[in-house]
Each structure stands twice: as C-alpha cells, then as structure tokens.
Amino acid sequence: MVMTNEELLSFKRLLEDMKASINAGVDRTLDTLNAPAGNIPDPNDRASLETDLSFELRLRERDRKLGSKIDAALKRIGDGTFGICKSCGRQISRQRLEARPVTELCIDCKTRQEKREKEQGR
Image (cartoon, rainbow, N blue to C red):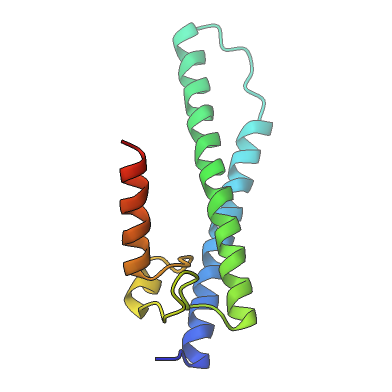
C-alpha cells in the first residue's frame, strides 16, 4: 500500500512538530544554563542543582539523536522513500509509522535486528 500525499503531509507535519518541541526544549535548557545560579553555599542544594542539570543535559543529548532521526525521516519524505524498510524494501505498516515515525525498519526486520543484538550481547 503506497501512501497518499495527504498521509505523507500528515507525517511531515508530525515530524516537524516533534522537531519544534525538541528545539523548544533546547531553548529552555539554554535559558537554564545561562541563568545565574548564584552562590549556593549548601552542598546538598548545589548537588541537587548539578544532578538536575546533568539530567537535563542527558535529555538534550537524547533529543539531539532523535532530531537527527527526524531530519532523516523528513529527507525520506522528500525523496519518496519514507515508509519503505531500508532492510527488506517492503512497506512499513502505518501503525508502526504512527508509533515511531522516524523508523527505517518494518517490524519484522526490527525484531530480527534486536534478536541479533541480544544474541551478540551475551
């Protein structure tokens, strides 16, 4: 089943909204990092602030990786390969794309990939 232009446009908007949300998170993080923390004499308060900042930076790193996947998915929409499994060349189900619009693999190929990774990790 080939996707209609309406479906592609819908996924494009979804991906663009995801990207905008990531960018808003980055802006919030930058505001937090640029805000003067002042002198926090209490070691517990300082440790808590540092833990919060570390967590925030880990989230931004995760978002950065997702942003790259979003850019790649938008590129696939542009070049006509969105929704086609890069491993087997079959159509990726709409349900899978709705759950994970940045995916490059159909559920069967993803399952095989995860199984191989699990076996190699033993």
